[in-house]
Length: 514
Image (cartoon, rainbow, N blue to C red; front, side):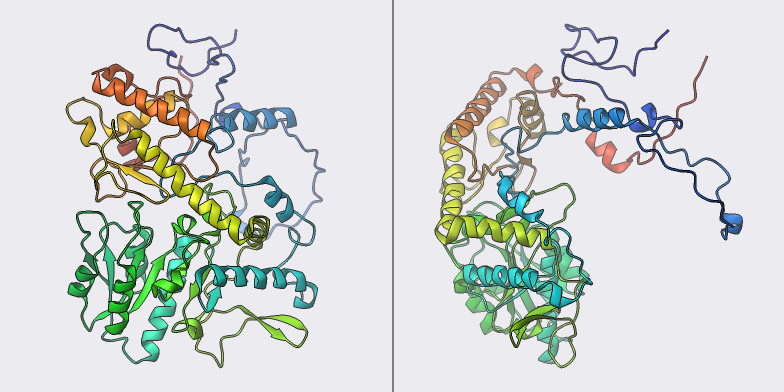
């Protein structure tokens, strides 16, 4: 007789009974692969290996490896069923603030898979990869043109890696001036990404926090008050993490340079101003650009990413290797730092070629005017959401024009018995991935929404109407809609704090009991 699978909670508390299979129509229950796999099954026929003399000694395996086996149809079915439990940009709007979860054209994916790009090897002779080097050079020219900067390091693999690169260039420039012992402090605003202070600390700098003004931005006067002979740099995001443009950024840059420091700009939100404003005109010295957010690469999933760093004339000599230069009619990837002021090699090889191909394909398809239009549309979408919700949700810095993302707080939920987390979980029942919550940390109960430029007005209207209905329920005291949420997801709400503190990272076979 077949046993029922692991207990699955009813769909709607006690109103809908659990099924025998655990499936709920097309929402199919799927156990772990260790629970359904078996040693006698495989989707691939492999000949038995020829006998060999082992050299492992006491380290030789003395028991089966225990990996689960599935047939080919079972393998396909397992991963398809798991994929249907994931929310994706292909399924609906993904409103995560500070993440830029937008549609990426499939044409760019196809081009990245072209023979000659997808099968490149970083150790093949440079004479056989001239096309790839030319692509990297063209992309670098685009990045320098869009930012009005003098050099670019292509090798960083992600945003935080780019931060590290930019700050290493700054540290090298300070060392070249003989000030390493005295300039060891980095200024960081309250609203900064957490990677900013982490990067500074990793390089041996101390962090000095710059308070934000009441409107969520950084004032030049506050920066001047924090300046001292020990300040090496400031790390500032613009537009900032609250979705606001730093209006005094030029004055801040001037103050930093006058004090002998450098200006690192976090480029995480470049998609709000790309093609519209050039960060080099602000007076910055270094900025990373997330190709995997701004220029057409799927964001998330662990990578790969790409975070090229543009550098000002002040920092260009300290850029890492490798870099591209002309050698007669050919292009050459310079691998050695000897004879230059470069701080050396940041990472193996040249960067992420697949990301470079996607980004350049995106840029060439859009053109400069199209890149600018994408930025304007992202800002328009965010302000449409802001204006459509301002009468039911509260904004921590007042009802003012935002950039590519709009920030709400939980002031409007006070007295309702509903928390920011409850509201986010209820969005799952409505078929939406929640927005970013509780970030930035400077705002209590933050709800950060970034609709991006790729959503239609109809898509935004349905999203707005859903949030308005949820807000109505919360204010009407309908807490039963929120407390148990999500009720319609494949899994119910978990204790996230406990899961973070005591994660279960290893599957263990349960012993049968009689």
